[in-house]
Image (cartoon, one colour):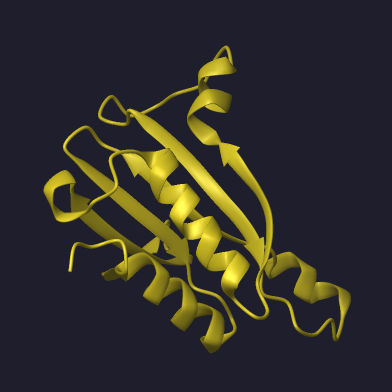
Length: 130
């Protein structure tokens, strides 16, 4: 897993998995697996799955990188406290899954809550063949 800073602002973790490095054949299968992990977590709460690829295709001026075959976000929340309204700006969380033809790219933005980062990292790393 690699951590980068996207657009000089957003700390993003990314894992690239060759299709031979995982038992999951599709974006949907990966999303389904991650949704189960969210559901099993004592704090995390599933919210939705967003088909980013479909949405972008539906826009008159939508642009998708040619290598992207499918792209979805699993949306969920780890919020255990609501100390002020500003914290809403960093919630909910999302894990993105993109099919790049020969590989999957799984990404998530670093959360301000270390246990959330640890959970997301372990979920994503569990997608790799053992």
